[in-house]
Length: 406
Image 1 (cartoon, rainbow, N blue to C red):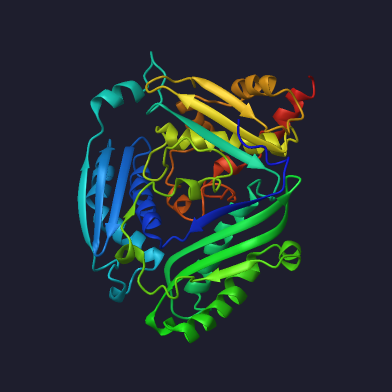
Image 2 (cartoon, one colour; image 1 turned 180 degrees about the vertical axis):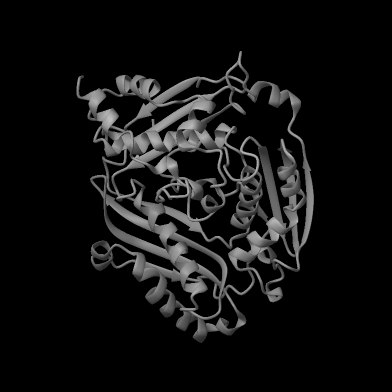
């Protein structure tokens, strides 16, 4: 059973990373390839992994497409990669990694026939899960987005960093950045901000103690303070660390190699909820690592929004090639307002939990994934373009109606 955060005072910390972090560049590229294929072939099978380092991008994985437009999109993968890098902001050769100057190596091949046999649906057989595994979803009442406060604020910091960088509010910022927020809890509720860390890559103009002191002041004014909850911030005396190593000129893929799927805790709940271990980016929705994790979040959020629990963690598990989940578990961590066992059975009845059912209900066969690769997969607003459908609260009334009869 997960730790019950309602019974003792404690500190809890979560981190996020910017879209320019090497691992997030890799996630962005993998999802850009995925979107380029889903845009012309909604049934494309994609498992695209990316590695980035100084002056180099390597694409690897399995891709199966079904029409000439998708073949053409695959042939244009190099430009898809370069545009993703350009959108992030790596356009200066001085960073040793830029959209026009890096090499792109592509080593993609078709999906295993053994896997395809178990995943492909037919008139006689429902589409099975693309892999075995366990997936978790989580929601709580700490924010209006039903996200834990530490990861929510960490995401907002790097989101604000991107805006400040792109608008030139602080001159000389570069795309790589990391954030971290420590929240003090009492009685299960946030009561203070204990510490904030913001590390941002910058040009050589900010090197040196004096310039770093000026940068810290600007970062606090333009990045940190604007996103902090006013009441909590005013009542706290947090420790603030900005570029605590002393400076951060060398960053991005020149500072560290990046890999797809290496920021799975950043992508989810900052460690507050459990994680099944599967990454998301670069995977089409037949992979339950991605689609079932989105469904688990959707369930948890609607359960909390319906007032059935203050905290809800959902576990789903699957066997490769099998459509129905092996198990469904609802864990309200001591906050349930209804019987959890009955709630688990209700969830299995009213939410579609087969891969095909999840894909249809959340409308996942669309090019909606590149935007998920930065600032978190959860706690975002559903878009008119079909993004973040798993954040909708359209099952609240159905849950309330069903449980009101108990």
